[in-house]
Image 1 (cartoon, helix red, strand yellow):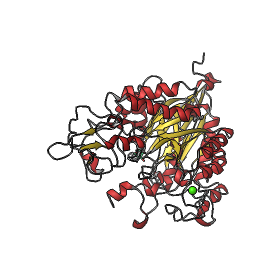
Image 2 (tube, rainbow, N blue to C red):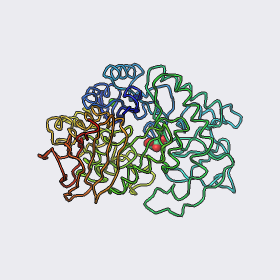
Image 3 (cartoon, protein in one colour):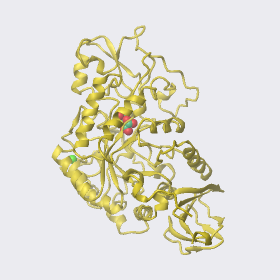
Image 4 (cartoon, rainbow, N blue to C red):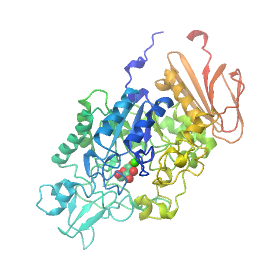
Length: 536
Ligand code: GLC
Ligand code: CA
């Protein structure tokens, strides 16, 4: 039989590889101010190489007033002094590349800081040449121009008494939206991207791209009949005229064209959209529109099987899938489904078809950390206190070892550490094969060694009781993954004899299975099927 599957080498690094998100403020402090920085990150790259990941994505390190912790950029080509200097950045990148790690920068195209010189000019007068770089509009009946809402609460318009108009901001008032219909804005942002591409960065994670362009007729958004009080107040309206507008295509294709003039660069897009809309971003030139559908998913085998199949069916030709369990904006996976199931989730993430993105600390089973009121940092929490939207609990410092402040800093960390940092830290876990870190590392090694996992196709995908079963196939080799979503044991009939390559449990003894696989509570296993005679 002729094998028509492409060779491993025809896949790009961002297809075969594994991405690791570093929340830059929380990885490693090097200058005793309690905040992580570039020199700190550089000293910890060896750990990431040891873990086996292929690329790091750094949350924003640009010059910023830090009202939204770097997602409010005041200079797209500067490094905030809190994180270091351009030289520190270059040194970090050199070390990463020497270790074989790609570097992906966060890029925030939708809005700038209100302290960005462009906005300062823009707000100075109605005739300023940069006026049209942002979205200014007259009010309506003494109020804002439309009913549009800010993602962080309150109206999305702020009145500026200097010129008697309102400006639009999808997020905080300190994050005015750029006007992407203006060619000068596009050109300026393209220049900023080239600045980093010329320095050798391997790609960008583009922040909140579905917000890039708004309706130019300024229609009101309709009420959302499905709104529930546990949702953010911005969800009271359907974002019909404020997200996912048709003109986004041209704007994103412009970013693609810039990136595409450099070899081997990747564009990842942040897209919180229903699957049907999210897959549309492949055609907008985004290599990996983030697939966030595991975050907050109904955690049953049947539902996840459904999700995989729906996603695969919706992917356009040539669209490469990807999966994510957590990030700096959403609840930690080990809090959402508990630590026992978080092991299953790790196995799922690293055996599904498509690029996995890991969130720092998940490899230690970190959970949401309780933040006392007086230490709250996140503006979302400050705007809407006590409603559970705060993101500080998932942004706490990486615990490295049992020395003071977990080796993260010699000062007071900007956010508290996990309460159990003295035992739950990298150094302690590196000496204990039963802990989450060893599972992550073993899964990463397995994924690297088994093309069936990194680039293979799916065989069958099913849910039997609460066990999710799927096959990954490449070059005549079939791996089968069984994930027990239940806290009870479960037995599964198997069609072909198989050998267990890896279990989420460290107490598994039996590895060769013939007719029936007995899974322990919360156990997941990766097996390799014996080749059938025709495959030999
Ligand atoms: C994205 C970021 C989030 C930020 C927001 C505004 O959703 O991930 O952290 O607050 O955009 O830039
Ligand atoms: Ca620091």
